[in-house]
Length: 160
View 1 (cartoon, rainbow, N blue to C red):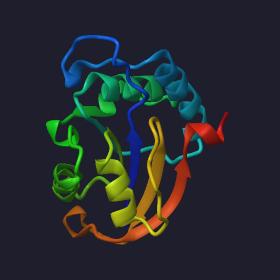
View 2 (view 1 turned 90 degrees about the vertical axis):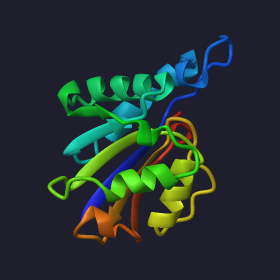
View 3 (view 1 turned 45 degrees about the vertical axis):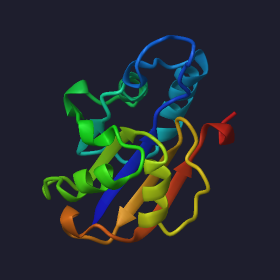
């Protein structure tokens, strides 16, 4: 069995004239990342963590990793997670090393909502900013990832 923990980036700011990849987190996004880190302590530790290189995803990731605490050495950046449809993320997941059993991914919507619904057994209308969905997949190899079970969905609004 394989497990994926999908974490959508925190609320980002549109107040700056920067590229999409460079958009920073709002103060609410930073606060929600700290809040979610506390709730995510109950999750099993991942074998590896992967993040989109977008500023908002990477910043969310580093806040959560520091608070869990997980060493930053487990983090790897991948352009495949800078995806909004889910196709690139799914391809990345299907190419993961089979020696990894549990991974945590930091990225974007619609990709994460789509994959949470495609791979999980609980319908989620929308994974909100800083939302986390933990999935257990029936596959023995990442290349076989298809359907599984939604173990937990943790959203900031449930913690406030």
